[in-house]
Image 1 (cartoon, rainbow, N blue to C red):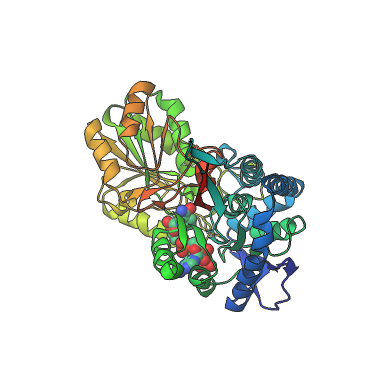
Image 2 (image 1 turned 90 degrees about the horizontal axis):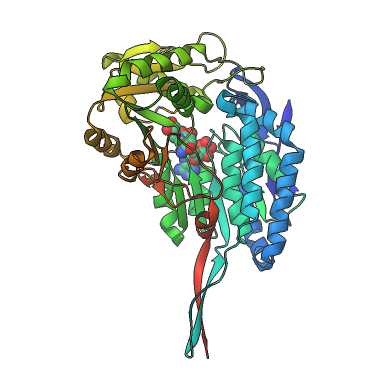
Amino acid sequence: MNKFTMTINGQQSQSTQYVDVINPATGQAFAQCQQGNVDDLNQAVASAKSAFNAWSQTSSAERKAKMLALAAALEANMPELMALVTQETGKPMGGLNNVGSGMEVGGSIAWTQMTAELELAVDVVQDNKDARIEVHRKPLGVVGSITPWNWPLMIAIWHIIPALRTGNTVVIKPSELTPLSTLRFVELANEILPAGVLNVVTGEGDVGHALTTHKDVSKIIFTGSTQTGKNIMSASSCNLKRLTLELGGNDAGIVLPDVDVKATAKQLFAACFHNNGQTCAALKRLYVHASIYEEVCQEMAQLAKQVSVGNGLDEGVELGPIQNAKQLQIVVDLAADAKACGGRFLAGGNKIAGEGYFFEPTIVADLTDGCRLVDEEPFGPIVPIIKFSDVDAVIAKANENDAGLGGSIWSADVVKATELAKRMECGSVWINTHGAIQPNAPFGGIKQSGFGVEFGLYGLEEYTSIQTLRIPK
Ligand code: NDP
C-alpha cells in the first residue's frame, strides 16, 4: 500500500505512525498516511516562522515566478493527482458536467496561474505639497490553513497560493479523511520553494486545535462546517488572529415561470448534483414557480434516474459515493425526515446496497420551509423542490435561512432577474447558472456562511495588513 508523508521544513517526516485512508467507493483502505501530532505541528509552525523573514523579503516578481512553477508542477503531475483525488474523495475522474477530479486538478492549475499574475499595488491616497501618503500591503506572517474533504486539493490551492503570493509562509492541515493529494502537492512544492515556506501536518482534532491556538500563527483560513468555524473563531482569539471563514451554505435557486423548462432543468440538475451535492455553493433549495412546478419536478426526476453512479475510477461514471459514512448517515436521516414531512419522492431515497457509501440521486417534491431537508445543508445527493407563486414571498423565504453563501435566479428576463438577484442575502448571486466561481471574482459568505472572501485582488488583500506611510515634503 502506498504511504504518504508530511513535509516539515523541507524534509519528509520520519514518523512511523501511519493510518489508513479509505476509498469511499469501496469502504476499504487504499493507502496510508502519516498521523501527525501536536509536536509535529509545533515544529511546522517554528519552521514557517523562521522561513518568513527571507520569504517576505523576496520580490513580487520572484514570488510570481515560484507560483507559476507550482502551477507547472501541478500540470506535470496531473494524472497522479487526479487518481489520488478520485480515490480519496470518491468523485469521478470526469464526472457530471465535467465536474470531477480532472476539473479539481485543472482548476488548481488555473487558480495558481491566475493568482500568480495578481499584484497588490501601492495605493497613493495623497500626494501634495505637505506630504505623500502611501498605503502598502504587508504579509501577516505564518498562515494556518485548515481544509475539508469535498475539494481537498482545490481548496488547499485556494488557501496556499494567495498566502504565499503575498509573502506569508504556510502550515496546512488537511482533513484526516482526504489528506493524500495535499501531502503529495506539498512534497512537489518543496522541490520549488525554500525550506519552511510551505509545511503540511496531518492529524486529528488536537492538531487543528493547536494550529488555531498557536501564538506564532497570524491568520487562519478555514473552509468547512459552521460549527467548526465558530470553534476556530473562539480558539483563535488568543493572539487576535485574522480569520477567513468559508462555511457551509444552503443556497437557494429561484426559477421564474418564463424559463425553457427542459434546458433549465438540465442546468439545475448539474448545479444541484455535481460532486454529489458535496460542494459548499451547490444549489440546495430549489424554489420553482407553480405554473411550471410539475414539469420541472418530472424533468429533474428523469435526470436523477438516468445519471450513472459508481466508482469514480470507472469510465463514464457521473456521480461517485458520498465521501464518508458520517455524511451518508446525515443524508439518510434527512431523507427519513423528508418522508415523515410528507415529501413526495420522485427519484431515489435510499442507500445503494453493496460496498461503499452510495446513496441514490434523490428528488423530493412538495416540501416547504420548516422541513429539515429544506432548512439544513444536506451536503449529499438529495434535493428538495419547493413550490411558490409569489416572488416577494419566495425571496423572503430564501433569505430567512441562516446561511448566506450563494443564490441564483433563473429567468428569460435577465433585467428582471438582476433586480431580484440584488435582493438576495448571500455573498454571491448568479443569473441562469449557479456556483460559477472564478479566480478573478471574490467569493465568500455572509451570515452563518462565514466572512471574508477568497479569489482575485479582494481575496489577496485578506492575507495582508495595511501599512500607511506618510512621507513629508
Ligand atoms: P468540519 O468542519 O468538522 O471539518 C473541516 C476541517 O476542520 C477538517 O480539516 C477538520 O479536521 C478540521 N477541524 C475539525 N474540528 C476542528 C477544530 N476544533 N479546530 C481546528 N480544525 C478542526 O467538517 P466535517 O467534515 O465534520 O463536515 C461536517 C459538515 O460540514 C458537512 O455535513 C457539511 O455540511 C459541512 N462542510 C462544508 C464544507 C464547505 O465547503 N464549506 C466542506 C465540508 C463540510 P479533521 O477532519 O481532521 O477532524
